[in-house]
Image 1: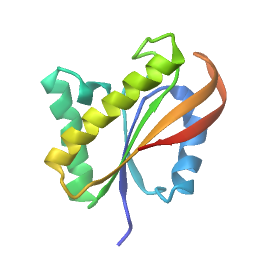
Image 2: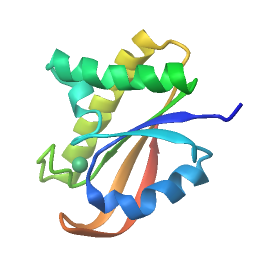
Image 3: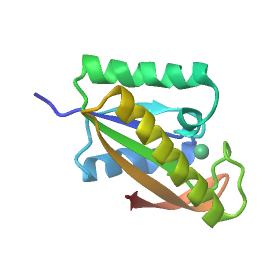
Image 4: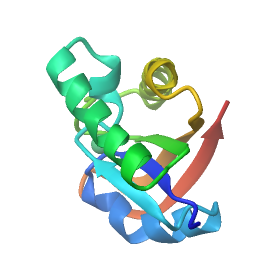
Length: 136
Ligand SMILES: [Zn+2]
């Protein structure tokens, strides 16, 4: 059986050119990609409707494709977060990824969850490179 992973990423276009190669490099080339503004922001937030909507998509990947690996990502200079200081943005996003991890683990206890913080070089309109940083 093909190993399938489920990815949550921000919709930000600057990641597009890098993302598939990176997934392949970490053994996750077969991924269902949930691409929404701010990535895990809504999973960590207070809007239960949006939270459930994302959890429903994870459930489809889990049930239809037998995904048992989740990859959570957030990235620097994210327009959905609007935090100017990079260290602060990173800290807030890592906190959100941990909240999302707890929520996902509660629903899907046998999901293995990996977290990455992506540092984009450039500005809001282009990125020349992305550093993919694993988060514990
Ligand atoms: Zn973003």
